[in-house]
Image 1 (cartoon, one colour):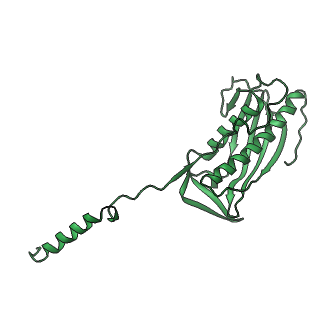
Image 2 (cartoon, rainbow, N blue to C red):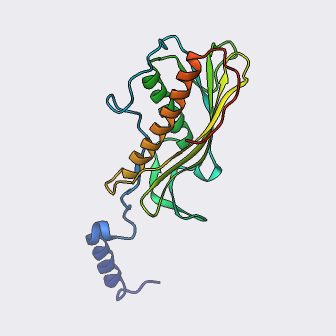
Image 3 (cartoon, rainbow, N blue to C red):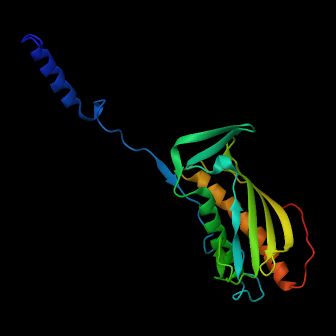
Length: 218
């Protein structure tokens, strides 16, 4: 049973905790989570649309395949070749592979001058002239202040799915130290990939009967 002598001490303790307000252990902590997204090319950022008419060109984008370590909401930084750091506060605003696919589609639409860009999956009855598949191997920033994109991409015929061209893109730029610098740098790497793919689509478009496969590294 609580004695009369103990009650005043407990009351004083309660009043003291209440006076601390936000310092109380029971007070909710502020959410310091930061959310980032990839962004498409701006109006003045891309090369002019290809010369030949492509407004009727239909391009299917996908599937886009990502490594498992990037399929998370947290932003990943590579601190050493064999070590990854997963941020406690920085998050992607949407699944990174879906954001990547959406921005790639927007970039291709701008560079190629067509709005007929379809993202995977599409209905079997949907007409697609060319299909672009991407296998992402690396897509993160490093502790030394560089972004890194390594991706193998394949262009296929939309009619029968046969392979027309395969290549690999390596892209890296310095990461600005300002807030959002990492996502901006990775958006720049994705823009480089978009230009590589668009350039090859332009070549294939000008040579519609070409069926031989090519490969190399950009």
